[in-house]
Image (tube, rainbow, N blue to C red; front, top):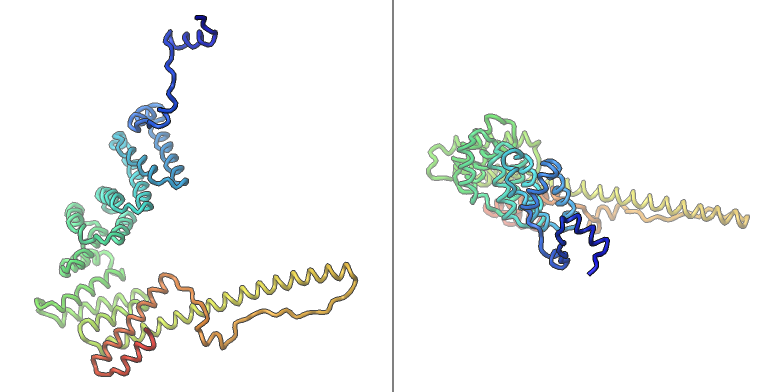
Length: 377
């Protein structure tokens, strides 16, 4: 048949070959392999442009809430071998992004495997190890990582994060002497760290209860010296008072634990009262601001009426609701805003009250023990 001018132009461009018709239904469902796209796009764009292009694509997927697709894209990019040799930092950035997405998807197993690999290559990166500990808290698998941490410590004996984590795993496994050695290594570098002083004291106090400990009294005195130093370095907080009382209580010295438990209860009550006063002041400020705005709007309306009618309206007092002193003293109807730290402090002072009741009951003072339970629990 006759060939149109458009068909002649197409045949000329394609070198005499008639182009095949595109199957739109099939192309919309069959994805292009990302490995082939990598090779073609890398030659056209270059490494930096290629990397930024796919990071932008991942960010777009995340903004739309399509985290699984973003995670799959990053996993495919991590298989790209050209990142292994010349652009290791780019690959580490992709791993961090994949870990964050997996954490968002609550897929802690995949995220933890990626973080483990990154920690192996960056043993001195403290923020990365903090991120590693977040997954340990989610899965409660610190003891299961003991072999992994010991292998890393053998390869990097000067790494402070690995040394502390090995000490933590040893405490959970009951190896208090091994933990004491680990903490002592870091203590020689950071002697003024409250956490290290606390953990050194805990290790020594726990070894006192072991039958194989030959020098219990000197060991306990040394452990309490670490704990009192922790008490000073932490600023004599509610938590440090409770920990000192718990240490004395653990070895059966209840008469020495009572003052620290009482201080814990006193500081906890003071903190609750302080929060209550803050709530009262905020409520008064909100009510005064609302009253001022209502009074101003009412005054503006009166001025408009006076201008239109020419009649002077009398001054009308505005009544605002305020919190009276009896309501404050009762405390029952006042809301208390409690954050995470305040909630932990409340838990500690209630634990201190319960422990005090145990000490009083053991000494034979059952009436005082019941009073502690009735007043604070």
